[in-house]
Image (cartoon, rainbow, N blue to C red):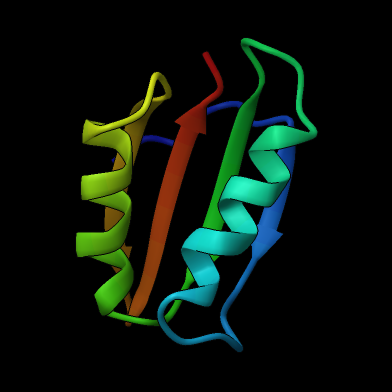
Length: 78
């Protein structure tokens, strides 16, 4: 796990499924292509949600990891 450069941080630690993904989608819509969104979540369901979302989108998951019950996602908008 390495710290990746990111352009925007989205803290969704107070939200449960499906809100972390919905808020990330909203943030990505307002970002320029090539920018990186770092998402910080606590909902374990977000792992599945973000995996499926990335699989079916044009965006790229640069890194994903869990540390002390927090889930970190680095998503590049494409």
